[in-house]
Length: 488
Image (cartoon, rainbow, N blue to C red; front, side, top):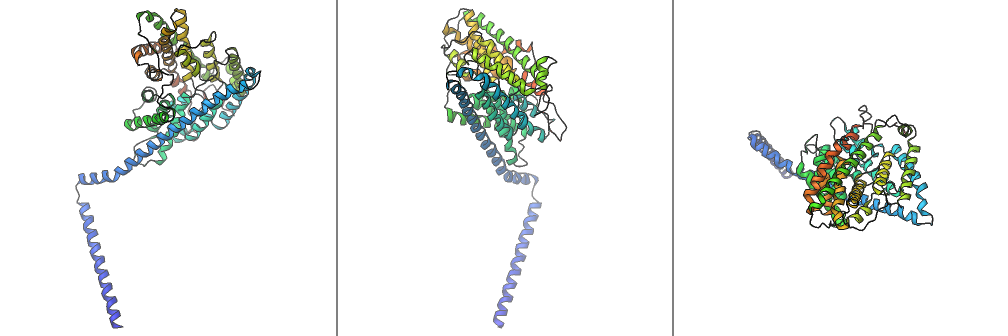
């Protein structure tokens, strides 16, 4: 028994000694850390923070890839909706008259759903992103305009507009969709990441454009020209990487093909100078007028139609849908949808457009947007511009092959005039048609048309964003134009 008790005593003694040794070592280590030079402390902090930095970068890249996948899904859904509208007309012998009822009804349904469940999804989406980038909005205010919830609603509503046969596009709404996806990454970032909602929204919006048009450079330029005017992007390299990654996801699905094929450009001669200038001036005037109509329609004037829109928005939307359906019936539905097929056929020298297609597509696009449903104007603007170039070529007596450069000039000119972003328009069109042989011509046309449009109106997206009036902080922004009545 004494032996056992002696063993326990010795074991207890060894444990006490070991504890004292460990305590001394810990105290010595703390003294050493306290005596470390400031530079050593900074190095230690950098080493500990490096893994968080790479983790944050990985999170941003994951959401960039998810943005690309969402845009791919949006594209496929919009194309399926367009084909569904065509199939609807072919289902019965009198199918060409079906849109006279189908288009107004579905337009009313889309507007009701938007105003009831997703007010932030109204419009094209670019003004919402521009407004969300302003510093006077709090988190709740930004979420009302740009969020995952709004993005998912936007995808379904724009696809519904394509199914209705409205003259709308998906590319502008993709900006809001991409920004809504990317801004969700913020909740997964560490507190000290330094990546704020502004950087994420810019990256997502530009990634959406890059993936939608398969134009990575166009997405980057769009971010710089349209979204980063008020504030620099603090993580430009990470933003560019996110844009490129989203574009690569789209390329992996759809292939490395240009949006409208490859432009066949013969050697340009001086004989096209006068028609080219005429295209630039015509596209600038038409685009400036379109932009002005979009702004005035959203502001709401004291005229009969604006009063009708304010008092009975659903009935007004039904009237707009009927007008679009009638225009589609006259043009054999050439004005329905984004106008992708007519534009590509024009660039390939194979299309014969209906009479007054430019004017009718212009009116159909404006009325579709005026109805209030979520609608983009990027692709319809390209179709209108292409038609303007085609019309000028016919008036000038230019041959079919020689008219192709004029059609491309019309596209870039009208887009530059409508969006107020000549550099973005030039880059996007150049990448979409692989028009590197016309770099200087496209750039000159974009600048001339954009300058003409500025004589008529201010940049459309900035003006529309200014109409998204702020509300008390608790309620967030009121994402309806000033002329609208906020009712379900």
